[in-house]
Amino acid sequence: MYDKIFPPKKIELSNGRVVLEKRSRTPLILLIVMIAVYYSAQVTGFSFEVLFKRISEFFIIIKEMLKPNWGYIDGIWPELMSTLKMSLFGSVAGALIALPAALLASANIIKNRVIVAVCKTVLSLLRTMPTLVTALIATYVFDLPATAGTVAIFLFTISYVGKLMYEAIENVDMGAFEAMESIGMTRIEAFRYAIIPQILPGYLSTSLFCFEGNVRYAAILGYVGAGGIGKLINETIGWRDYSSLGMIVLMLVITVYTIETISEHFRKKLI
Amino acid sequence: MTTIEKQLLQAPRNHRYVLTVVAIVVILLAWSVTEFSLKLDSNGMKIASNIIGGLLNPDLDFLFNLSDKGVLYLLWETFAIALLGTIVGAILAVPLAFLAASNIVPKPISWLIRLLLIFIRTVPALVYGLMFIRVTGPGPFAGVLTIGITSIGMLAKLYVDAIEELDVKVLESMTSIGCTTFEKIRYGIIPQLASIFLSVMIYRFDMNMREAAILGLVGAGGIGAPLIFAMQGYKWEQVGSILIGLVILILLIEFISNKLRSKLVNG
Image 1 (tube, rainbow over the protein chains, first blue to last red):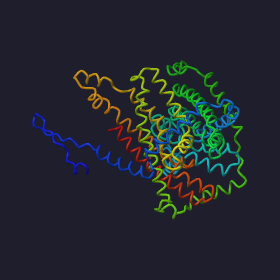
Image 2 (tube, rainbow over the protein chains, first blue to last red):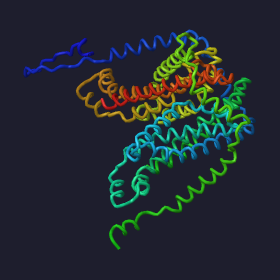
Image 3 (cartoon, chains in turn brown, yellow):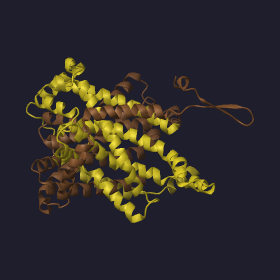
Image 4 (spheres, helix red, strand yellow):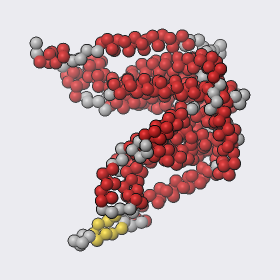
């Protein structure tokens, strides 16, 4: 279609043969992106004027945050621990449930198309729901705030680990599985001895990676009342107590960095 | 004893190591379970059934309303925030990425910039959102800036990986045939980086759709604010229609982004 409107350039080589060079599609794509950006700027009210005039406010807040309120540590500690508990329990429980879910969603193990399709749809629906929205719904259903947060993280972990795992299971080498079935093992035994060893390192590493991300998510869940450090973030910003906010962010950065380093160490070992 | 059995016995044993790790994980789990109880709210079950009912009977009028109060307009606004935010972030991330690449600048500078990127990445998006609202006032503009700055961390990190893997042999051969610096950048560096940068940007845009959808919760525009108002007002039919619209849009964008990225990577 595009080649018909803009015919390809003809280049004649020295030996008399004619080569066709297709015209670049970059200008068309750029044009579409420019139009989209223009309308987006209209809708969102983007203006450089406001940005340059008021951006100093942002740096004033940053400057306040750079003077952390060290006395606030005692207030942060229990909430930080509760955030960690939420993300740890949610991630482990989610990763455990994700494995059977991924198994049911892999087309090469389960021969029943309906089960596979239903499981895949459920996993992708769960994945599209933003964690914060799940947490918000969960706060209406569960009594304790921390439980609501744990449930939100649990559901997200199932969907994330589940998706990566069914992709891994669908790409494993089926030779070993078929060989084991042919010598008389049941499907479950064959799965245990042929598939699990192939996917186990990937499974553990994905779960660890998901746990890392979950600590970050858990930090904001408190904003909608689902327990953890987000509650304090909401309060300190409400009171414009930016030096306490700076302390919270500092603690959060240290925690996340520590967890990332530990998890990266184990992930490197696994692969 | 057959060779296979010998080989099996020779395999390294790390039972003690595995057991220690498992024990630590179990202890941590036992500690984490203290915060958890499945006790439902007094009318939790009723609300749960209301939510499911709302999802099954969405407010169709609200869903297909074309005015600027309808779901379609709100989705378009969310999309616009994510798109513009991604572009702002992608532009800001390029200089930072070059400054953080250890094959371009001296080690101390690259290390400092990396530390800065870790800080930028760890501050939750909601915190940026609440800070930018003080700058621009509530509305989608704050959302754009928030998405922009939260994207920098991940974009710059992935850009750095691409820059550090640049094939310098191409540049050396270009120098040897007498290319100028500008020509080296145009024909030696840009072709190597452009497709990776674009693919990273598209991936981040996909993630930003989800971020933009929740930023409304702090008043930074998009679909989040109507969602939280509908929930606080127990209007589950409206919640249902917003969630259905959001899920369809996100799935659609994910599908397109996967197609585009596989095309970019495979040429």
